[in-house]
Amino acid sequence: MNARILETLEFDKVKKLLEPLVVTEQGQRELEGLGPMTEVTRIQQAFDELKDMADLFVHYPHFSLGATQEIGPAMRRLDLETDLNITELLAVKRVLTVSKELVDFYTNLENVQLRQLDKLFEKIETFPRLQGTLLALNDAGFVEDFASEVLLKIRRQIQEKESQVRQVLQDLLKTKADMLSDSILASRNGRNVLPVKNTYRNRIAGIVHDISASGSTVYIEPRAVVSLNEDVTHLRAEERHEVARILREMSSLLRPHSGIIDNNAWVIGHLDLVRAKHLFAR
Image 1 (cartoon, helix red, strand yellow):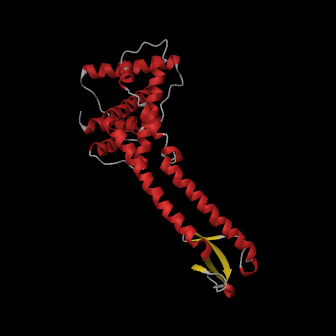
Image 2: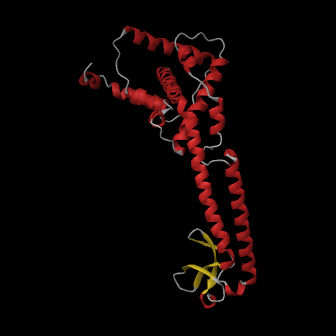
Image 3: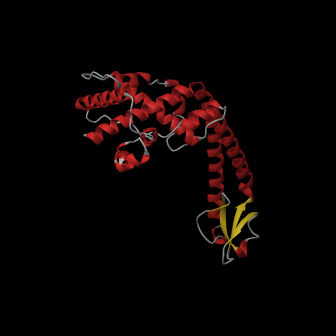
């Protein structure tokens, strides 16, 4: 069927009406590529899928899928021996979560005889071990302390050093109050500093990080905390190195299963589109 006929039929306008009902990027991709069918078997299969979804909604009117993002490019990167970044790992984590939810739903399905959709549900595979590993990456993209003993140890050391820094500075706020232009700590260049009156700048030894616009206040990192802050900086570098290692390890665990996970994502997207068709038709 040529483009002019599709335009006359307003086929794309109809597809636009379905877009708000699709919750996954995979489903959106399939919807974008959807066109008229000419093969009888494919047409019948599509009607059977829709009939299954309608029957399913009779007994499970609140059936829904979790939103997922496209992971195809990420899976191809894994196949090319490239490690995934945090955003990609979160997208894979979400696909694994939705996969498990759908498998659990299908396992507990009652009173519904499926003709086509059962084949889709049965293609979904779950990966409990991978899901457990990816729990160390929370939904905000933060690698949790329990991801490794090394990471936990480093972060505890950072907390201890930063606590020592705060204690020293709090003591100086009290003992040097008459030399300060404010009674609270300031921050410059990622370091906690004291806001010292310019007239007293030579009375407190340390590194000058900034001067106020008026020139009346000098922001000094006291010598007493310089060494501690250097320790914190070094530990932060170790933390970043360990986080990078953990992400590499997660990618390595996912790599052997990239094809199956990618197929899971396709099944989720297709179920999403069939659900959207049903909701639109209804």
